[in-house]
Figure (cartoon, rainbow, N blue to C red):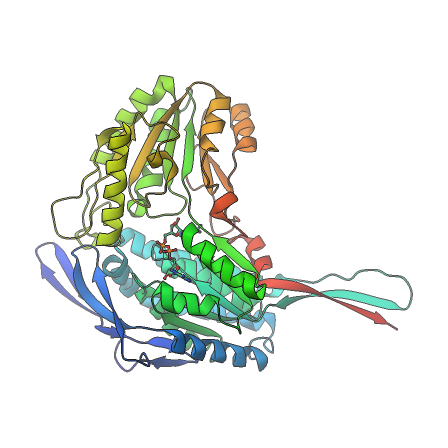
Length: 497
Ligand code: NAD
């Protein structure tokens, strides 16, 4: 157990702002112990809502990764998880979810200040994480092998084996649920985990570590180390003693992870970026389309891999649809979650500069800035909802991921052209269709290159539905029953009687 309370909320009121006092220093969770960094370094954690330092985290490097992988290996070799019944491994997930219940208020507050989430989104992160833990906890005892008939005197059966030590790398936009779903899949199937938390927003995953500790997860089964990607991340994915990688992050980093994995022929689940298109046909319910596209691009200030970042709209409805989208943008308050605003900041000054620079490219390319495009003049890292019209599919703003609250609107004339535009990027994560014509919706869904397609809503689906990319958006699936198959390999046992 950490020697200080992990997080103290003072509830000190300054105007309408509730200031949370976040524990000033956090340690890494390795082999069931809370450890400082071996070289004494720490990572500063900044509140994106005001740009101020809120905490520091022990900076893990190659040494900490070595310790964590060794702990995970020991736990696996000694079969501390595999010797439990699958049902007992499932019970561990229920217990972690239960611990999170008692920590929900604190986690929500932490997500506001560490991650820039709104208060509602902070609470949702906890609920979503509990859903993942309970869903995969419930599946622990339902993953079965097969018996294969080979005639008299032979018994043949298959076993779903864990890989061993699963190395997991998580991005900053939703570390708690993204981390928890991979940990849950790994642990219920008997793998042990070393997870590298994101250096920009690591705190909620330390709370998950604490919940694991309280829930009685065996020592070494779950290890959580925070460090910079180029050090701890690179050391983890190239470690000689890992057996499996789950990477969620950008395409550029994903490529370097895959190169490291190739050296040792390690299987990978890759969840990468996106530039997902919402296709709106002329007969679409415009209010519904505007509401959903706005939600799809503005939730968490657009920092969602499956954000609705392109609107591919029939030329006849572009004008009225953009007006409705501008109204959706205008009615949202932008500011810190602590002030109960509708849309929060982007994660860092660096990310805000990157988004602003790409907006300037859009203007230089000849697109029209219908709204937004410049940071708010206040402390923190805020970009208002931004919409570009008159966008051509070949422009950089139509091809590159902003990972911010920026929508580009591209007109089309025929359904074939809509498909060509929607499929015309390197990515293939999500796509949406807005129409009242079900036949047209099915025709379009068949032709869109994407891991998931939403019709007349954005983000139709849930914990139960498989999620993942095609093309440069990655491969493998998280969420749903299918995800578990990414954490096991089949062993066939044949017996001559
Ligand atoms: P990123 O690739 O910069 O970082 C992701 C993680 O990788 C971080 O923990 C980082 O420390 C680590 N990392 C960085 N360099 C590394 C290296 N050389 N070796 C190993 N690890 C390294 O991505 P980001 O900016 O943190 O996150 C945003 C990206 O993640 C976007 O592209 C977004 O679309 C994507 N994303 C995808 C999904 C999905 O499910 N498909 C979900 C969330 C985010």
